[in-house]
Image (cartoon, rainbow, N blue to C red):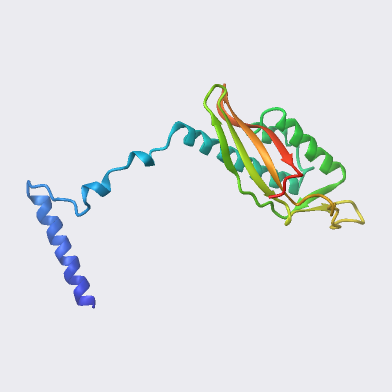
Length: 189
């Protein structure tokens, strides 16, 4: 088996050396029809906009989970300001302040399934995202002395529901920001 590999490798090296020394063009082994990109695979401006909006939305959730794990660690407004516009920015900052005042934090992780529902290219450009938020692995945990670690989650609160999110493209500086997050608590998913 090793002898066959060495022979094949030797032939490939020889063929490369001969092709490099000659003035002839070596034909590709890939048929031309396979090397051409089909126009259907080229993303449209709407696809690019939806992708950018979804990326900002995912970054928002990464930061949110980090902030909810330690809501009193800092003033979170500056951290969220590069991902959120008003009114979403004030809403999350207020929620984190409320969480820190209990005192409590969130433990666990949300599961999401975001999809772009619509894209508007009219300025300011806007993408509406629908998401299925699954908070069944997430719980509110007390940080109060004597109650530290106690589960404070409300058992009557829905654990799976839809979110409708609006992400807008701001012109100066040019960036995408989450503007509204509307939980649809009565719409299970």
